[in-house]
Image (cartoon, rainbow, N blue to C red; front, side, top):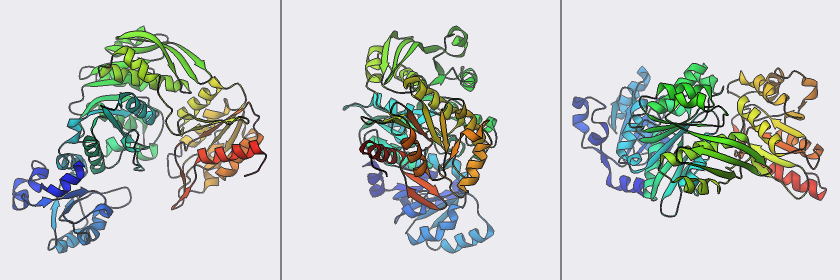
Length: 518
């Protein structure tokens, strides 16, 4: 594998840091060879380079002594307290310690150099937006992946080839891990990669050093304001993807207000292709060079029948995906395929074979009993869209179970209630990932958004909440379990407990069908 080859051969510090730190500082150690690189002290081995930057709760230098004990050869650091600087002076006897101004911003460049600029060997497609990043990136990878031209994914569900993902726990991993994953894709024979690019990842420079060819924008809705503090700052973080050096083209959702702003902002710099489900395409033509358009959208029990109009052709497209937002997602993918010179008819054929992404409008249905849809919707807009989507495909009553995560944007909690109240026939508010917060307090904040809270049920335990709706729903009803999607755990305090909505729902449906109680 490419990362292993690098570890065996080693890379000189001069090759990694030239132009990043002053020549007089680098010269004495420029021939020193490092055999591995990491921002995680627990992953260090003998001969490693440790990039120590400030995180959300601690600084990498807090683990400098651990790095030295692991045999690290070099520590790069950006800032330190007087106490840490004294520690570094003591460690100078064991390893090289170099201060690198703006290290967090430069980490991706250093890692890209270590792994021999892997993104230059790939067609890298970056996907950003509040909702739909995971679905769009996975659909792109499904469409581009063939036996002779493999495609990888980097994102929420893991990094690697589309059929062999390795979980990371982050939408966009740290800068070193991103470059390592890209290098592993090159070594595995991949020729392209679809990458989810989060606002955190952009703001923290985790994708600096990645050579993107195409960028995709899905939408912008309230989320992560605990981090960004304002919608303007959140939007500005998303826009950074479209200003990446070397980016050639963008696929932008013109049905989104900010999407139109984004298209207008970068129209002089990029080849802009818009996609839309709007009936008034003429009004959108000023925002992009070309538009991919769904002229008609007809829901079916298992998906949609579309008639799409593009600059490369028009035709019928049948997709087996639930939810009209997936129509927009598919249009985004079709736009990317056409931008990447896939013939129109071939693109339609590939799209018709798309499979749902784990935990994204994933249907669980037995011979009897209600249908259960598991979705990751955890923003007001996404929850509202998921409820609309379910009602498009199912005639029975809609039961919705959802919660809100702890230690996250609390302003959206009452807005989640508003998003679901007018659409669901029965609503149960429960726990999501409460983290360090009291789950009952979170539920109380959600309830402030309901106009008729007396009609809403509160069940703190998520298993009990799911059991309640599966027990009481009629056979022709549909249940939406929102918020956790693919996640196979619940975070309570400092504990991560095994919990998977899909497994719990399936077991309870089986028990209902057999007349048992779980």
